[in-house]
Length: 351
Image 1 (tube, rainbow, N blue to C red):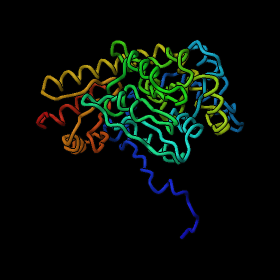
Image 2 (image 1 turned 60 degrees about the vertical axis):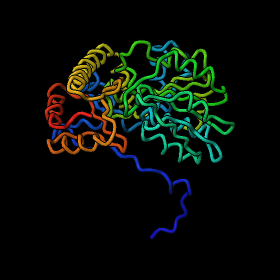
Image 3 (image 1 turned 90 degrees about the vertical axis):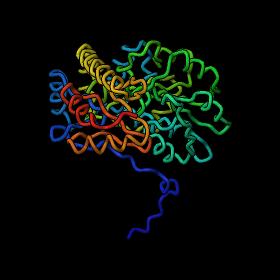
Image 4 (image 1 turned 30 degrees about the vertical axis):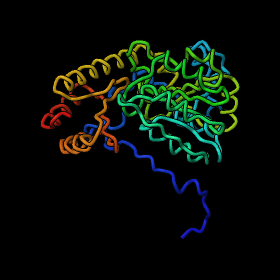
């Protein structure tokens, strides 16, 4: 047995639980993946990049940084890329948080938050969601003190679905001390059709302590390649760069992300199909008496103990969903998959 002494912080870290199921063998509605195959030009770009995998990729993903900066009207020193937005978040927390600090975020939210905070040695302050499954922003602000290193907001919130408005986030940032890093996790931004929803990129000019996270894993359908990015001020980007692993983004992931950006109209068409299906599924569920919160992402949420029953019944029909102590999250798949899920839970009494 190993006698290696590990950091005390690791003893309290929860384990990340991935959505179960293998697409093609089960109806996998557990990981918020896009159900469409990559566009041909994305596959072609990936195949082309494979021919050079004997060489290291660019150390900081410069080609993708350049395209993203142009896409958002930013300077290149305001963009950082990495193997998933989760790694960009991990680097940002490493840059600002340590033992003696705290990081504040809503709960339940993305389950990686407590893990990433714990790794830094800082403590988590989890602020319960409100009755609508959204952020209690006044309570988050009230929890901020002199030891707060960062605040994380998630819009649309994973796994519950509601999103924040631009006015809400602007007021929050105006009230928050500028010494506190604010991370706005917008992994599901492209699916959010709610009027007035926040667009973090539009707030960057006014708030240099803001880091906006986006990803190619969801709307762009590149979950298997791990490619995400952050938009922020030059100062925050430079700090993230200091702790980032060199060559962290693979050349294949970068090539495919560039191709996906160039084929953005395909992404928008696919997202529109998912949003149309989402509204259809939510509408049918509400007609049948289910209380479904606002769904701003490519998933829906069933709150409470009924979640365990939904997960169990769906699984008996070969449908994987993602269970949490507070409820169950179900990804919006294609129409056939969604109809299979609706049929599977048709015998459960709405509550």
